[in-house]
View (cartoon, rainbow over the protein chains, first blue to last red):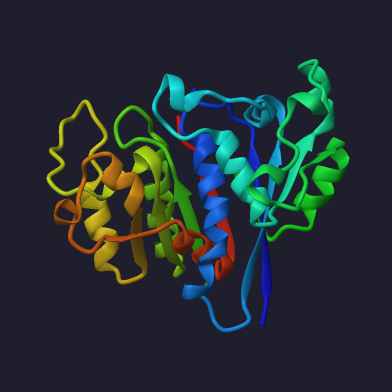
Length: 137
Length: 120
């Protein structure tokens, strides 16, 4: 029985490329990875948004209206609904002049209980240090 | 012998990241290691058959087939990413697999090292 922690570090802008969407969908795929693993083995995902990546966390995204595709907001809320650890870099939030009110911090509207964390960079670094593998998107 | 998992998200044509990843796989296999190669996003096109080699573009079908022949290399494409690009199961290069994204995470789980190469 073992648990491996994978850190999904998102630093790409939303919608400009597919990168941040793939980060979220790959992280969510941790919920079904057991079918490939031995009994008791687990993957523990951590999602961290840094740099330009924090803009993926903005509320009220309208991608379905404009592009006809699901929003990254929806994927973020699904991540929280599934109790994934979601961290947003505090320094980068401040750099963009954003406040917590502007960010997706929970998925209460769909029944989620886990909240996103606005964390200083050094806390995200600690999370990365304790991860088995780092995946940068 | 160790296992290296390489996840690549860059396009077959328009970026040399896939070329680098394939070269790295060759080097790892020559050293006796095994390689799991995950292609997602635009990188799924690496596992599509019928690639035509032009000198002006990356042409990786042949080196991938040579790597598959070693028995120490497996390449798996993200099924949803492929289908979204109109590339279906029957278009898949012989020896390449297609799975959902959890396959990649499972490969990361058992890997000694993971090299994740983002796209664009």
